[in-house]
Length: 193
Image 1: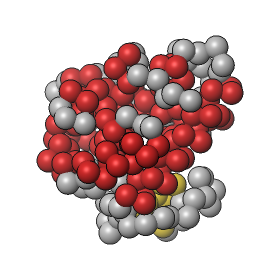
Image 2: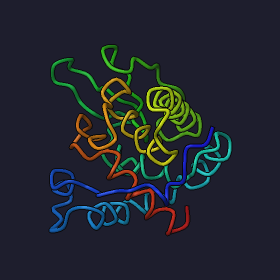
Image 3: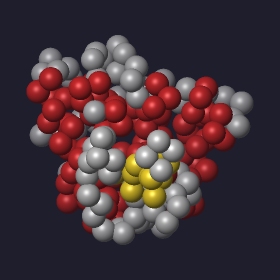
Image 4: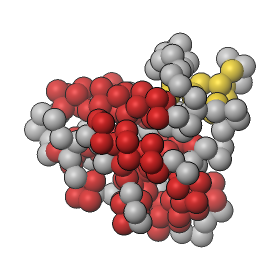
């Protein structure tokens, strides 16, 4: 099963809410590219393991880099590998560069490997591929590129919250998750991943 070609996926890029994180004066693809570029130096430390995981699972390394950039800013937002603090639970919800959801009321995954390890990236990529299968079954009439965008949205919000292609990001963080990740991934692909 192919995830589709990231270069052919339509994207509007980051929303104003997401662009505000970096106090950017632009939104859309330009904002996503600026954030990916900001993360590029840190991302370079992980290039070998990203490429290894991409080869192992048949996933474009640029997509993995795009998710890492969006989820943890290439590790910059993490505290000892943890992110997504929940005041209600008084605990972190997610682990590692790709922010695997460990919240028992969310993804409920058990962390594997160190936060910046190949084992962690492999686990997160397996979760992405799980959602690929769910999206392909749910939307068999979508093109492979539409399914890829839906898969990315599902990685953030779950496949049950992806209702249509026209509103694929309606229930994602910032209402732009897949659009932002796609734009960042395209930037990484043009810049060596």
